[in-house]
Image (cartoon, rainbow, N blue to C red):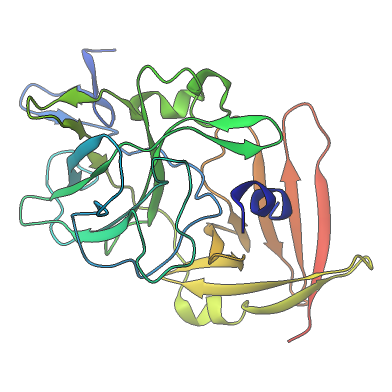
Length: 294
């Protein structure tokens, strides 16, 4: 399916800015908030990408990139070993591999004893997301580490003129994720990004399993949606895999990555129904109720 058609149908004491946020020097070391901000998952996530650090595809063009960094605990100091890092992005023509067994430009690595991860790939390009929206070039990252909230985020590149018009890349929450592409002196370039993890509220698997199933709109509109769970998160199924929501507490799940006051939430009720609520500043809250049918 063409990307455009798919998207349209998916609907200071001394404070230093680090590569991953704001931290403060306490006289001995830097401490404080180094949590990496979230970004939207996007519609093209596929689970179970191959365990590999080299994503280059034979016969494909593109600017070679070595992406590297360290995954840090929430103390902003200790590296996290054996974290799962998933990377995916479009090719040199702006197209994602959403279906082939090759999983082109998709890969997974585990961090080493020093918390380090790396990938060899290409620099993605901006693409037309439909409706006149040109998304800036970006990498998608998902980091899974025991004891922490799964992190979904995106990395952008300085000098991309499309950033200023993109609602996610231009947001203040993304400013430390707009990165320099540095020549490596060997016909390639390096992009470095350190990730700070965050502990947030989670939900046990047994409780999530009670929420999964098929739901239909209660107000008579056609169409059904399917909810499923994976690695402690609740997902709405789409044509590639799904859209993930994080648990906020109080029977409410939130779509991460919206930092402009907007939100998209699922709010569950004792009778088995849930409300899909969406809000954007300057607009009224939009709400649709769903009832479980299987």
